[in-house]
Length: 342
Image (tube, rainbow, N blue to C red; front, side, top):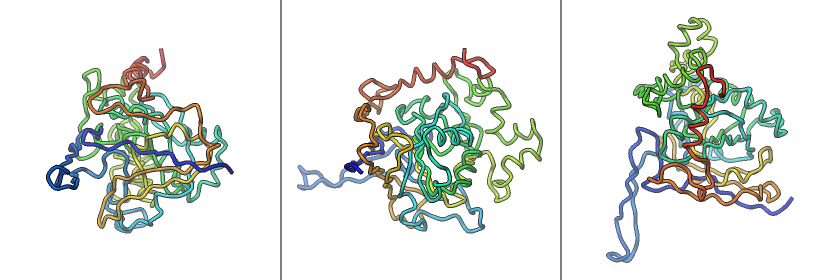
């Protein structure tokens, strides 16, 4: 075993940090300054689900699958977000829905034995962390998970899943689409609602997985119950953040907006994942500093240190070691209505 190195997996925090479409802007103020008081003391007002952060069950549901009242942050085990982990690099097209098949394929490709995932942490590298910015590319058009992936995590009895995208769920499973109490159905790059864009690109049958009423219209009540009935049976909307609920409802916690030097960790290699939320009484989640302890032989030496160029700077820049969000969207829209690449 070689030297152990620390790898930062956290996006930098500031008042200008990219944030979810209807979240408030962080406010950072000074209570004391060096010039006035000889000390620097600052205060922050911020939604705790900003940047790299943890989710607790109470964030998305009233009851877990075993009937207990959904737990708050302080009720989760101290090591719920920390432990032995592995990176799975997911091969997925822009705006793609990550399913159990993608996870099976990643395990096979990187030699990860699914029988050894019990009690472990999975870090998904979809490449979305390279697009972290206040853009449609990162928020509207992210690749993401849904019901099938959530059930896969439960089946394999992992204890935590950390994702490098805007949420534990695909954007169309969230209130950015046609789910949730706010149901924003945001306008996309073409000026049409993103739900309409998705149907034009992938077809109504593919979109049905994100919309309860479309699913029932196309396939019937019984088929919908087979698809999302376990969620509906505990009183939650089956296509609204279903991966969140499958995971958290079974005690599997999540980390969102994983970033930093994630690309440096070679997929399929085991390492220690360190993540601790605040010990917040009645908390629904918490911003966190996330770092990996990795054997130096499991670091890809060809990957440069991550630098950031966000906060009013627009799409990705070469110095940010990231893909261009504009190019990402061009790849997405360069397809016909059947979802085949031109």
